[in-house]
Length: 362
Image 1: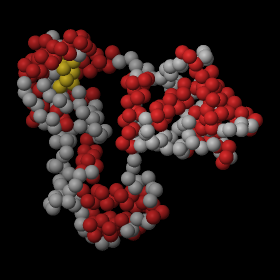
Image 2: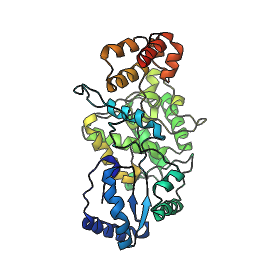
Image 3: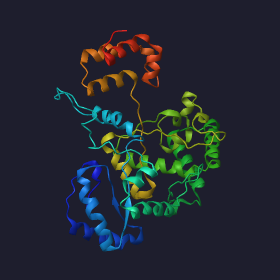
Image 4: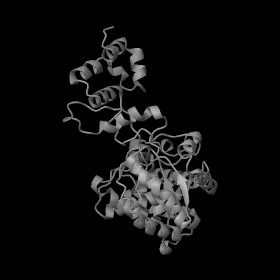
């Protein structure tokens, strides 16, 4: 009946269409299919709260009560709202936004509510609360630490080898011959030493997979970086075509990249042509399976001056006032972890902030 009501998506209030969809999902998922209700105090949720229990009773389905969570505490709604507006063009908004009223999500209730709060909020729907416990009991996923789950690398049938270790050794030696015309004991010993470490740490499959999708990129005219970071210290990476740098030419250490005394995943930084990265990702999904490929997220923190400028802009502080404040943040504070630390170390910054917050000079 609704698609994530708290995101502001319109509720169509089409009971029959919702019923048809629910019947299909019930046939597919059986007792694992629930009808969700939410209550963030928003008008567009009222039709759902009014009709979802009726639909659940008619189709003999269970209700479940949930709450969207975008921040932890209720008092975080204003900082969160400011953060959302940072990426917005506010140049035409001469009067500025009221962070307490102009909520981008339309509610201040998308925080992590306690069990007591949820029970009070859905006191008229006790069966929906009970379902949350039922779903929790159904969840038995355990993610053991220190265990790596690699996708299966398919060894070609005509390779003449029996396992991943042997295939890695085969490709590495063949690659080294292609890269270096006159191989000496120096290269051979270094390659064998690295291969032994890789095999001992059970990372042969990982190296084969990385080399495989890099080969795919190069074969499809997708630009690939020459290699950076500690992986440039690996002769095996060079032999497999993962990097284009011979570490022996620059006295680079393999131990900085992979060390049996410090067991951790190899960190191979690879740069692909930005407008063709999807090609490499889709290739990996097709070959190793959708469930074997995922992307990671990087969280960045704004530095002190950037925070002051962005927040000041959102709160409609005059440009001159923001500059007056930020000029009192010495460059040595550029890497401080919080504005609080900066104000503690800079009396001038503390005084100028108090001036604008209270309207008084200090």
